[in-house]
Length: 51
Image (cartoon, rainbow, N blue to C red):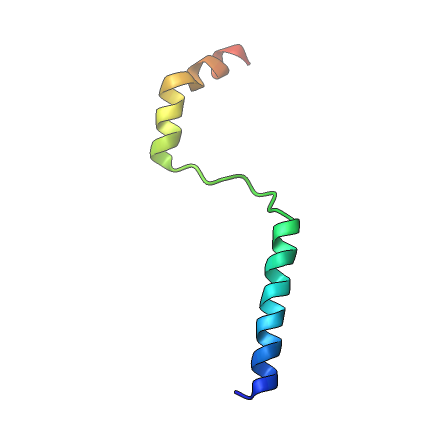
């Protein structure tokens, strides 16, 4: 790999990371199946009865 290509790769990688930081993902955080079951036991049943 020549020097110019390596430098360009590094600069592109930095630019991509900076761009990603400015535009955060809109996807919600993953909640595991065990956590969902735990949350449902604690307070999820109240939400179901209200709606």
